[in-house]
Each structure stands twice: as C-alpha cells, then as structure tokens.
Image 1 (tube, helix red, strand yellow):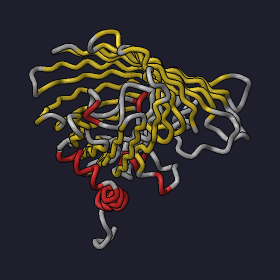
Image 2 (image 1 turned 45 degrees about the horizontal axis):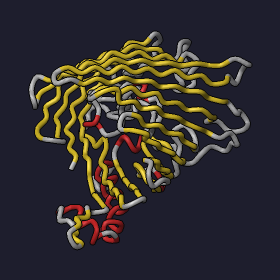
Image 3 (image 1 turned 30 degrees about the vertical axis):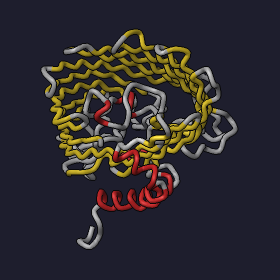
Length: 378
C-alpha cells in the first residue's frame, strides 16, 4: 500500500460518516432533544424524545503466535481477526426511534468485523449493522411485527463486545448468524416470557440465495428469576440454491446466571443438513461454558472452555479428515474504566484433531493468541 492511500480503518470510518451525516441532518430537530436530554413539554405531560443516537467503538490488538503468512487469524473467526496490528474491530453509529405504536432502528458500521462477516453481501449493504421498522399489532398486548435487517435471535453473544462476558466470541457464536433479514413477530405475554417467530431470507443473509425454500426461525426466552435466563432458538430452511436444495435444521440453547460475584453461562448448538452426496444428513455441534468472577466494581476475570465439531464441513470447509473439530480455552481480565468503557485482555488457545490452523511454518494442530481491546459505548 502506497503512502498516499488511506489506511483501511480510516477509509471505513470515512465511509461510515458519509452514510450517517445526511441522516443526522435530516433528523436534526428530534436528535437534538435526544442528545441534550431536554424533554418536550405539552401541557403537564412530559414526552420522551422519539430518536436516540448512540455509538460504539472497539479497537484491538491481537498477537497470534502461529499466524498465517497473510496475517489473517483462523478462518472461522470473524472478530479480532487481524494479526499484530492496531485495528478497528467495530465502529457503530445507531439511531433508534420509538413513538406510540411504531419503532425503527438504523445502525451503520465499519471495521474488520464488517469486512470479514459481510463480505458476501452486496457492496452497498456491507456497512449496515441493522435497519428495521416495527409496528405494534395490539392495543392491549405486547405484540410487535418488525421487518428489515436485525440482530440474530440465536445465541447468547452479540457483535457488541462489551455486552459479552468474554473479549472474543466463542466458536459457536462465530459460526452461527450474527444478523438476519426478514420479518420477526414478537410477543411478550408477561415480564418473564418472550416468544418470537421469524420469516427469513436465509442463514445470515441480507440478500437470499436463489431458491424457493423459505426459511424460518423461532425463539423462546424465559427469565426464570432475577439474573437467570434460559433461551431456545431454532433455524429451519435452506441456505443453498435450488440446484442443491439442502434443507437445514439448527437448534441453539443457552442458560445464564449472574450473581454479585460469580456468574455462569452454558450454551450448546446442534445442526443437521441434507447431504449433497447421499440420502443421509450431515451434522455439526458445539458447546461452551463461561465462568466469570467479579473482584470489585472495576476488575473481573473470566474463563471459557469450548468444543466444536463439523466433520462433514457444512459450516467451515477445511479439506481435512475430521473438519473443524477442536477444543479451546481462554482466560481474560477486564477493567471497567467507567460505565460502558472497558480495557480487556485475553489469552486463548485451540487444539484441533487435524492440522487445521495455518502458520508461517504450514498447517498445525494448535493456535494460541493474546488479544487486547479498548471499547466504549456512548
């Protein structure tokens, strides 16, 4: 890259603000209320601002001891995936609108996460984090229909780093959808139960592949008691063209419990898909356990153990006998500088059955890395 060319992170940030600038100007009057916090007073009633503007920035440095020749991290990782460079994982500007029976959200992003995870999307959509509108369907019930691009209902981890207990994402999170597009019907019959049904364009796709097989999803989220949740989510459909027409069934279940000092999260994935070579079904699965210990209001430590197996290479093609079959461990320390601002350090290691990890010396069974992140939401 010549000296006159912009660095990737700077170019992506510039692209992000070329998108968001006109929108901020268009909504300037309402946005001003949201940012300053001054309410609109009509008589004696106080009306909250309908538009809220938020942002998130996550900058990282990852050192991979067995890095590949092109400095890319293992192929199944989509966050913090560049070796030995200070880089932007995710920079996000988000507008949220809610008034009466209508709600909407628009989020535009830049960073290595967007580059890696949306590379197969149309170029003009690769910087879209979410874009959806929702309507409330009932006067008396909490029943909403949302349509557009939105965060996935699958799994306990999200693309927003500081919402997760660990700095990096688990293998099951990296290889199930972060985002979806379609329509989502959500019903909350009470404060403890949330039910959802989804009609989708595909498995983590904004633009669907050319097929006539519809895709669906479901979610049951149960708040068992304070700080304890249980979730079961599914995906059913095809992510292949009609020429193949391979049907996929996927389940994810997770449980989370967080106390004043100790917290525990457990999760598991299991999926099957029709085989292109026989009448049988190919399967893959994964599991994780995360333990977090808060020492005080600022410092905490976290340990993760995980396992993933995709022997028929439905999700991650490796070209090896056992596919992506690996165990992993990580140990991290978090410093909360202030509310919604963190410095995090994590060491992580993988051990595969086959030589699935690339290195400067060729394929190897093991991969070890250290990642440092500074992230803030505002």
